Image (cartoon, rainbow, N blue to C red; front, side, top):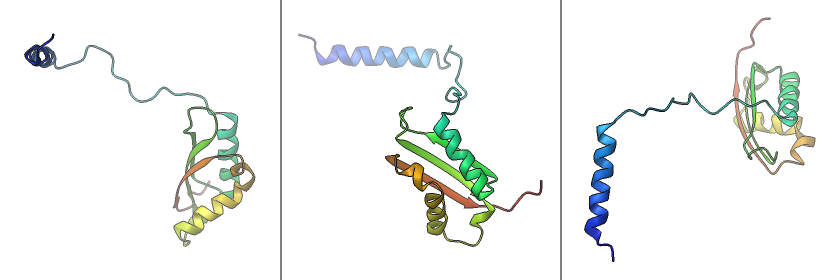
Length: 117
């Protein structure tokens, strides 16, 4: 039978080893690996960019690639002067057909000043 003192000594030696080498020898990751946007992500983004004349629009499939959950962040001059609820309703109306086949959607909207092109 293994005693609890054995586990304490293993824990102490593991802590000591990690303190002895405080810096990892592996190459740090700068973030998640970049992956190409799926056709659905691109279609949602393009539709919002076109209809809202958005300055920023990020669409990400957060379902692990199966296309059931999306996170959308959009900044548009179309949102100036309207409440957050109305901003979300506007996005929902634009994506009504697409939303019918989506299980979950996280929206983040904000107004922005139009940039002259």
